[in-house]
Image (cartoon, rainbow, N blue to C red):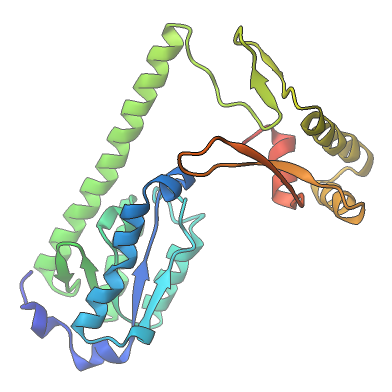
Length: 256
């Protein structure tokens, strides 16, 4: 960094809030990588050490379980960009660049807005001032490397899937309510209650013609729908709860 850390944080920055952005790419990472998530939340202590009051540090973690490949479905990132653009942020904190964005367009847009609004960026390596050319260049390189890393991860995963498919060993994740039998054939879930719940969804949809109508039918008749409950180092369990509109949509589309 081109400016000393203690000279970077000014009274102007401290008058504004510090925004801590926390993201993990998948729900599985949220469940299993608890230490990594804890390190992200611990960054608020860095902000307090730099001079912000604890109640000035705002945590945005609504994107836990969301990929950083695009900001389109990341409500938390969109809120972060809005707060920065409104001049409410003195500093943005993230454990590493890849947690903020793995897309160069999203990343450089955030950098540009931070430069305009005099907002600092902090990651595990230090503090950066996007208004400075050298810092912006370094942050830009970090963003490019993060995007390239995502490309390589996807390429490795796709290569593995293709190899399994060539050997005839690839099993596609099935929609909820279906399972593979011992011979690898797709069959209905052996649980009769689950089968009946799914049949009720499709029967109701044929009658009312909309996913919203299906959810309303379940709610008005006190019907419950199964969902899988996954806990670290525990077998998967089946729980029963309300059927939401977006869940009906996924079932009808045959997605997980």
